[in-house]
Length: 338
Image 1: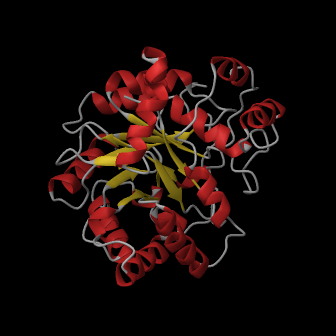
Image 2: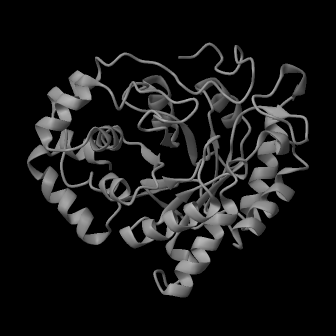
């Protein structure tokens, strides 16, 4: 049960429940239903997505070690990000320093990229990710986008002639094999719409545990949230703060006057209000910041709550999608869904 559900059903006991959760673990966890051995996932991850002006691998490594010191145990990466190797080095150093006793204390998510989005390339791609991370298994492996691009080292965004048929059934069968082999404890998807999830669920032997999508106070994803909840699929929100500062990001979240007003009323930051709102929607979060103080602040969202009036105000924020995908054209990507 997520915090917003506790609040709705037992408002007088809400803070007591939160305090109990925090006394058991600093970061609450959710159970991934389709995982092997009933795997649990921390509700907030440190994102490591790169951008055109991204800092060095050493900066990523230092940030991950600092994050572990602060209490982060979930780290989100992808083959496309170029951060797997630095994350692997940080994990090795954290073990050497005694910051963690074993790799099992961490939850590592990575993703299959478009140029490997073919049945025969899934397993080799996972092996490459594990090699870069210096790990024996992932806790969660996701199909990054429901698109296939001809294998090769192409520049993004990809042109139309590079896009080829995406064999969802074949790719998912290979993903299921990754879980059966123990190379990934859980499998899931990213950037999947309701329609694409329906297609996948129609034949999947192992349903996806997670769907990682863009979600923030300026992009609520209400229809998708309701669909995933009904199907037992956990949503992870990427760009939870609108990715301000990224080449494709927006200021709609961090410059929102509505969120600023709510933050001031609670003595919190706009980022904390946005992350708390996501948590109260029953979703998990992948938040990217390498600033130590902001990383710390991003964890300080579990011992307070938004009011119903706050939620009503946030519902008034103008909705805008900011991430239209790694292709030049995207008319068919969202199946007409908003």
